[in-house]
Each structure stands twice: as structure tokens, then as C-alpha cells.
Image 1 (cartoon, rainbow, N blue to C red):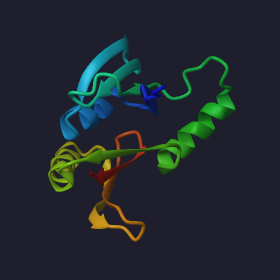
Image 2 (cartoon, one colour):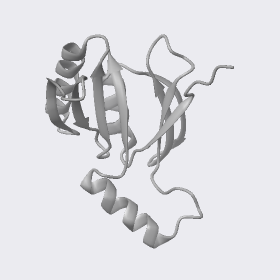
Image 3 (cartoon, rainbow, N blue to C red):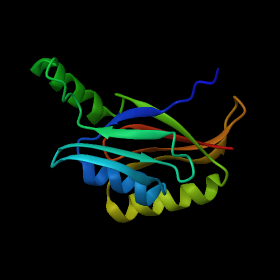
Length: 140
């Protein structure tokens, strides 16, 4: 039996900016774009890996989420502590340079850490995407 990660979900309060980060900065391809305006569910993923994707979704769109919970989610997203994802690249420096250039030119997102060796044995870098999600990228 083999189990894979089919989709991970990240909140995106500005779908266009989030799409730009994952498509233009990281090189992901758009697989699906459903909805309109701020109510879009956009699936992106790495080329050559059609079975794995990230769904950029409107935060707190579920009708079961209360107004107070929506406010809490918005506060946590603004602080950049709501959610995170860890990615990997064979060319960490090249990926970092491309993403940094996009962040600097767009004014969206934030560079948190340049590529460096970590004490736990991985070389990585990190960003906040335009929605404030922590994106760590490890060297493969």
C-alpha cells in the first residue's frame, strides 16, 4: 500500500498575490481555479508531479465558522502564525533567488531567512507568502 499527499491547503486572503507567489516565484503550475474574486480555490503544484498540489483557499469560508473565529483567523494570519508548509528544491539557492526577486519586485510576501545550514542537519530558507503563511524550502 502506498499513501501520498494529494493536497495541502493554505489560506489565501488575496488570491492573485498568493497565485503570483506560488506560480511566478516558485514556478508551480496552475491546476485548477474555481470561483471568483476573493472566493477562489486555486490548486497549484510542481511541474512533473500531477498527484501533489496545494489548494489556495479563502480563509474561514466554511459557513460553520463564527464571526469571532473569522476575526481570530485574520489576526493569526496577520501575525504570520496561522499555518506553514515545508517544500524542497534540488537548487535551493536558485529557488531562493527567484522567490526573493519576486517578493522584492511585487512588494508581497517577505523574505525571512536566506539559505543556511541548520543545526538539525538541513539547509533551508524561508519566506512568508502574501497571506502570511510560513513557507520553508529545504535543499534536496
